[in-house]
Structure formats: structure tokens, C-alpha cells
Image (cartoon, rainbow, N blue to C red; front, top):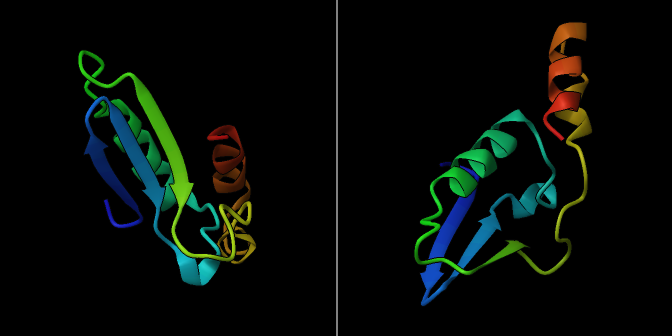
Length: 83
């Protein structure tokens, strides 16, 4: 996972979006990494998940408009369905 870090602290898993230069903006790669991180959570031991963003300026800026500007119509629709 290039854009998401995970750390387990007892029964808590911290999932961190790691794109501080882009204010943690969401693109297809970040969303794929987030999906993988959530799917990898050990539900037998983890009781709480904390979702956070790297850096001091922003949790998440929203969608990465630069990434969206190069998408085809089908890619844009698929990206929109990811959340």
C-alpha cells in the first residue's frame, strides 16, 4: 500500500492516509489502498479503527481533481462509485 499506513495499538488499528503534499486528496490508488487496509483488519482482535490523515494541514482535502481531470467518462463513473 503506497498511500496508506496501518499501525496496531492493542485493540485499536490506526489507518493513516499518507499523501500530505496533496493534502491527502483521494484518488483511485488511495481508495484501493483504503479498501485493502480495511479488508485486512483482524476482526477477532481489533475493536476500534481510527482513520486519520498524515500532516498538519488537512485530514482529507476531498477528491483529487487533478487525477479526475484525466479520467474517461467510464473511469470517472467508476471512481464516483467508490465513495
